[in-house]
Image (cartoon, rainbow, N blue to C red; front, side, top):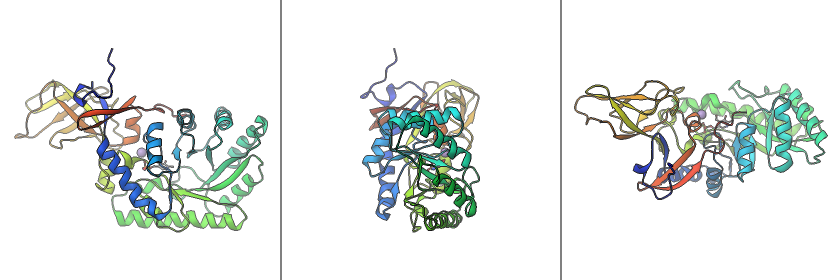
Length: 367
Ligand code: PLP
Ligand code: MN
């Protein structure tokens, strides 16, 4: 049976395999911590990128305080794997999910949730009341700061929701979340900064308005890889949620530049020759996503195209060394989070040798 082990060389691995350059990944973590920690703002990395309890732990060892997950089912898996200081950043709606949340909270009292509707708040409160759990769950009011994905509107709607939540015995407001996801990939740095500061104004003003209304707002959380450096300059913001910086992708590299390196690639094999300067590799839609454009070959002289579910093409200009059947190449994903969700394991290497193997714990956990 194929059973790759620590100590194998990268060239021993079958393909497609998801491989991580440990030197580059560790440098990314250090760069982020060195840049953001001195501001005093807490870093709660978003684990929707790595989907890994081991990586959550590594980030915590480097200075992060807890982690975020997108979905309840991610929280279930990451908490079970031993890392339970988690903020679930998506709304938890529907009787099945509410039941699952109560079961999770029964075992893991550090779980925090976000709420953007009165009906959502009431459902969770009632289920907690019925469970017999005394301790109220920590809630962040989810605020729309311009993404228009989730979040209550600033001003009176946010205050009205907070008052509603405040009247529910099993919910305790501890803060506000306002995620400006629409700005993360803006290429113009000055524009990204300016729009981010406007979103942060909405967020911090709402936090202040809630405080004035008597709420104990301790956490003001926001930010991603493209904006965290701006968010931390704003007085009143005290937590940021970057995720992709650890591995990066071509989309983020094109937007925010090369401060963080592309530390994760998909190892691929040339399986067929299709012309004098064209080959087929064994990575297609099932191993590299295309929502943010096409992946790139690490050796930029070879241009990638999708040939279907299982394969892609590489073509090159005359004068570039030919690729042949059996050659191995590395592909840089265009969008890191959904690409990782296609793979079972990370093979993390240094100097060509696999040093660690990490499961993608919450792979496929979309509920
Ligand atoms: N916070 C929230 C609520 C998100 O949805 C995301 C990503 O979509 C992030 C933080 C992290 O963003 P990134 O991976 O771009 O750093
Ligand atoms: Mn993403």
